[in-house]
Length: 70
Image (cartoon, rainbow, N blue to C red; front, side, top):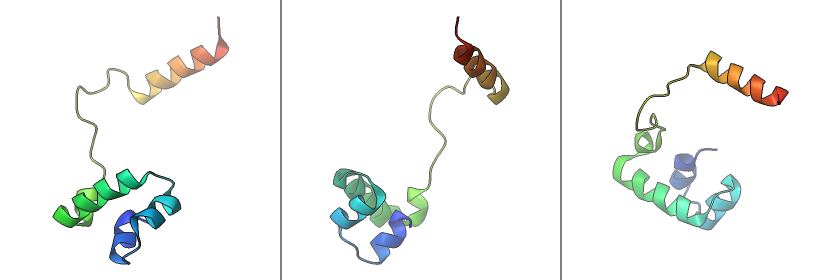
């Protein structure tokens, strides 16, 4: 269940935190965002900053090389 759905059901912050396995502070922050901008405000956004230099295939090759060891 999503946080926005739980807010709409008027669940307590402690209850939501327990159900989602997060801190009550995170729930308070999410609720503040939800109250100001609705469910759309809670959607994930791309990470800010410089785009990655490696594509997915390159990352996978690095991961495989690291798993092989020296």
